[in-house]
Length: 159
Image (cartoon, rainbow, N blue to C red; front, side, top):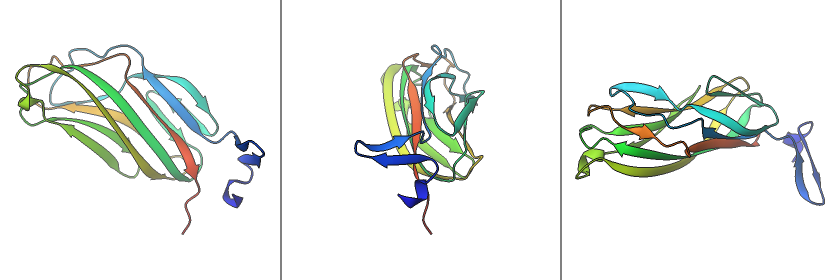
């Protein structure tokens, strides 16, 4: 626990303090998103604590270390004409974590929920955001307003 000195305390009830963490919910449904375009997940922070800030749908970390990120995205009318797939990606300053869906396997447009999580190595000042890329199709795919993403600080990295 020595790596957390100054950021938290460890007491009888466990780890306490303002370790960076947040959860974001979609502001509303993003509808009829254009194909062959990268869209940033439009969200509002539901709660945020500790050394992390949010601006223009991008999270900025303030502590160097490892972060756990997750998302649960609910897609409506996922375009079955998208013959090369749809990706949902967590983009950080250091790398991208992609999750692909291939809706051309659907008989018709469908609803799809996808979840993903990863551990990302972040430096103070690094950023993270969730994006969508919808390839080809008819431009009628939507992100439902109950979609979420978030993350929290796991601790310092040890060399």
